[in-house]
Length: 392
Image (cartoon, rainbow, N blue to C red):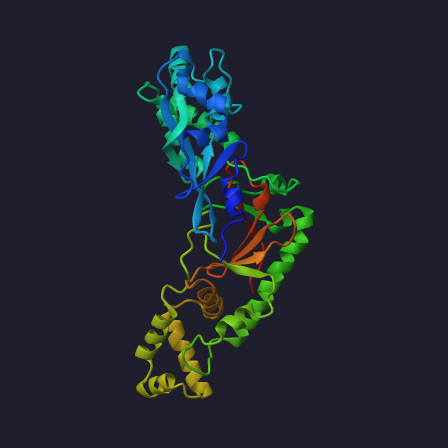
């Protein structure tokens, strides 16, 4: 059961431009923060540089990653000196648009007040946090704004500048060479920094080295699904799901595990089977004619007609899920139950190339995703939904 590509040690290794920390385990004091961000920078900020008293703030993107072997979430701490470096020009006396095209706040007095508040922000106490950069930017912007009267348009422009600065200073996991992640972003039809909303790219727009391996894995899934549909729900014995996991995963050496989506970057997909298999079996028993129910409970061999009746009852109990989808879902769901104990809708495969760290199939919706986790940066969603791939 995987949801990450960081080891426990890596999760705590200071990285530029952000610093990773592990929720619940990495309670660092000021000395630890000084080691991560630089003693002189933190000390200067604590002194306030001769200006107003420092306002203690730690800016975090929470649950960036998850380490399942030790059951830890990884948060990401934005280094405020670098945030100020990127945002400062927007609030300077001779203001510069950040990002380019974002109009500056015309009133120099307002900019000076905002710049003073920005200067006083330090990273010594957890206070400003959100699950992703789009959620964090308004919080940081509101803190900098304080009680300074800004028009709605000025507030929006300040938030845009903060968003740009956070993106430039946000988490970076740079462990492999190459520019596959950047290539995917350039070719994507939709880019996203939000959790639950992956980037979107058409299979024909994948960088050349990724197209073949990606279509190969999707082809393996498609062939398996066709076989599962042919197998159907005509199961000879009760309980209904006996042996299904092997039918889904046998011979699929590229399967790594169920993907739990603990960090929430993928959509919060509701499992296609909104019940346990025990409840499914009970639902079929409750709806079955008494004689058939007795045969099911006894584990008797069923006639072909009885098996068709059972298949119809499963379909009805599932709430009218299309037959092909229901058949596949039972098989893949059984694998998820055996692997993770829950009906997670995501099945994770080994990456189709050295650049792609994981390939994920959502058997509830038919969506395919890939991730270049080791080149992930600038706060973007690490996953790309690949459109144009058939699942059966």
